[in-house]
Amino acid sequence: MNALSRKARHSLEEEALEYINNKVESCFERADVFFNNRFRRPVCNLKQRGRAAGTAHLQKNELRFNVYMYQQNPSEFMDTVVPHEVAHLIVYQIYGNTVKPHGKEWQAVMIKIYGLRPNRTHTFDTPPQKQAYEYQCSCQKHQFSKQRHSRAQKGTEYICKGCKSTLQFVDKSK
Image (cartoon, rainbow, N blue to C red; front, side, top):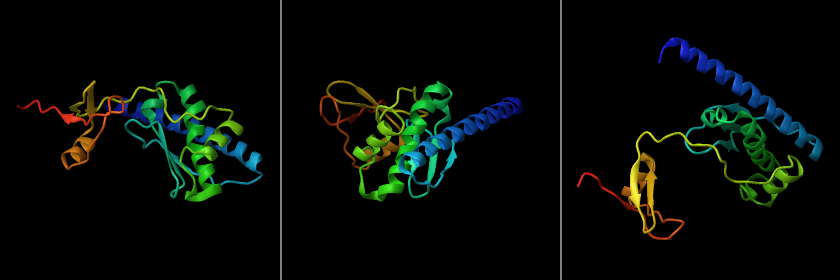
């Protein structure tokens, strides 16, 4: 990748992070008013990779967002992912570790403060895996990341959500 495209990508990421930070602040302001409280603001970054659109690191008071997914549909990302992650921090700052991550408290914040359906999943495309390992169950094939494959090779058993059978590694070297 040449220097110009690296600069252009960096500039786009800086702009995305600025928009995200503004949306995070807006979400916190709504929560401040609703709860009549000033919540601690988090550090935000674009370090999230893989299949998650965002993550809330509760003890660090940090929000990580996936720029790959943001770029697919910035408007939808801002309207759904950012409030979703902020809601986790709001709930944590009120209840600590005593509640489930997507429990009734989190769902209430999503509905009452942000007016959103409390969805746990997103509809963004995920980046292609650099190295995929094929596993098979009774009903379909599954792609494992290097990390998941390594865990399976060390004895972790994975079960298909559909057919409930154990996933078996398809060794193509044989």
